[in-house]
Length: 534
Image (cartoon, rainbow, N blue to C red; front, side, top):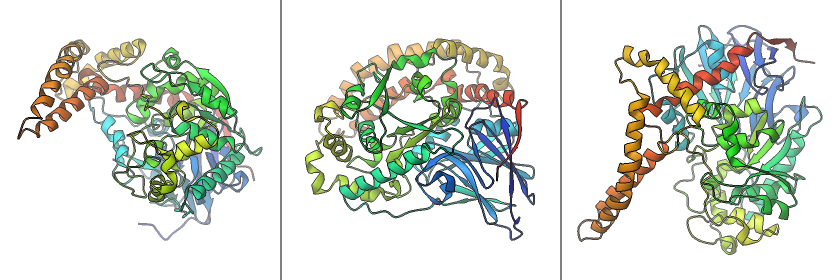
């Protein structure tokens, strides 16, 4: 409940920390105190009444990112007698906060927050992957409590938070109703929003502007994003030439047709980094988009215009159309920490207008879109019309769903060699933690034996023998229920191949401890106390 004794105004004081990730920040809020302390990296925009690492659909100098639902990044805005903390207008990033003693700490990084309050996680718990993965159930049903040694950290996706001088309260992000009554109206909205976003990102008032770039592939979403961005003058693209399974996924040809200068990168280059999976796992429990590191040399000070969530917003058949992002595949969340270090903002344009998903689905299924609907399970008429109308031939994109994720925690593929060795050393060094709690020690040696059995015996036998038998039995009279067993077995094989089991279940606390260290090291190296300029 909000208290009535408001602080009349706040004075924001900035500690700029040289060795921190450049876009990270932590705000320290104490009740009945006029001063707000913000510790931050060097590229946080700091003003008297606001700070941010954000791009939005308005004039940059106005700082009105708290009054829109189209914002990438995060920040805080002081108005009247309160301070509003603004989360990204997508499910790709989040805010997190915790109360320790009388003080409340809030940050755009769970790692920075944990380091600031010296919070640790339970090394012997394997529940973190499912906690973070719950965001796939949507904004209404995700797990918001993240347990630590200092109490629960609260995770906040999409919505904003407001501090009145005594209490931090979650509030809804503005819900702005737009004309999305037809394809033409929707495209006009997307193009005008893109123009505003690009103008904001390129503002000369920024400490460092964010030059827009589009990751290009042979799928549906990125060519449509590139087409919309080209109308706003964006001409730089980047492409990983293969997908996660080594198949051709290059977007170079599409980019050239659209007039882009495209940099081609080798997807496997992500493996050349030291412990490359750590930041992704520490942010989301997995490192599905770790391949972004293959493009690392081209991402500093960039606004990456992505198509994450396009598979939901642009497909014709929807299990639901709740205006609060009711379905999500979890993609992109693993960027939420690594982008703070690499210095880029993730801007998934597919979320623009997403609170009106029912209107967008209606457009996809309207008669005017029939020509651009090619049928099958991979049918997205809106991005197809956007891209084909720009001159890209139908056969050049959106033909097959590619496997873009990196499954780095499964039995079939488990981390890079160096990361796996580091993880095993960590498991062995902390073996007493499991023993003290009366839990079974996850022996790497035993785990590898189990993995080999599952991969080389159980999975092949199930795939080549058991599944065909079950499919045949399901055709017999009265045996249709066997189809459920077939589905269960297929899912079990997929789980074994891609999810961490046995000794691989504890990668999150390993990664969390590693990644948190970058904030411990930076805390003693201060650039100095910086007050917001008038």
